[in-house]
Image (cartoon, rainbow, N blue to C red; front, side, top):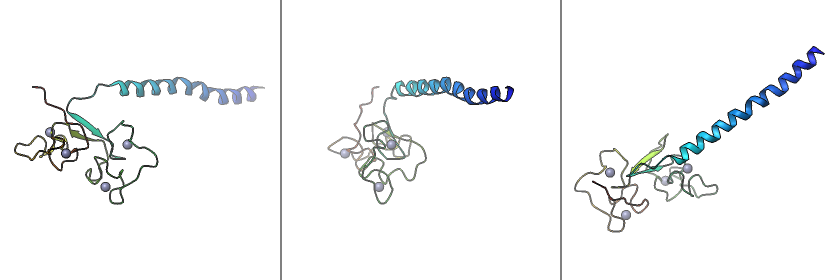
Amino acid sequence: MRRRDMLKAALFAPAAMMIPSLGTTADAAEERGKKKKEPGVCVLCYKCGQVKGSELCCKAGAEKCPKCGLHKGSPGCCRLGGAKKAVRLCTYCGQIKGSDKCCKKGTVECDKCGLDKGSPGCCRIKKEEKTA
Ligand SMILES: [Zn+2]
Ligand SMILES: [Zn+2]
Ligand SMILES: [Zn+2]
Ligand SMILES: [Zn+2]
């Protein structure tokens, strides 16, 4: 009799503990999704090279670049240099945020998109105007 009760407890206890913990992780994920976008920053997913959270990010069946393994033609393709975390691009200049090239004076602007010509973001991310 006692042994049977123990078995019952072992079977039901973990399941009962799972339910509230699952609830909290879903809430936390939702919380992160709602977080306001930082101005002047475009975050690239290091796994696929696309703009993080965009429709294309980590999309199944996307064509991959044979050189870098990221999505072919994505902003990060052959530009992230094997990053292990999300890469932030500056939407004012198109360069990697905080890099030596970011918002450097005297750079050549792309006549199509207005970002630095040849930068990771050039013609791939939307330019944002700086608000002073
Ligand atoms: Zn992704
Ligand atoms: Zn590539
Ligand atoms: Zn910049
Ligand atoms: Zn451009």
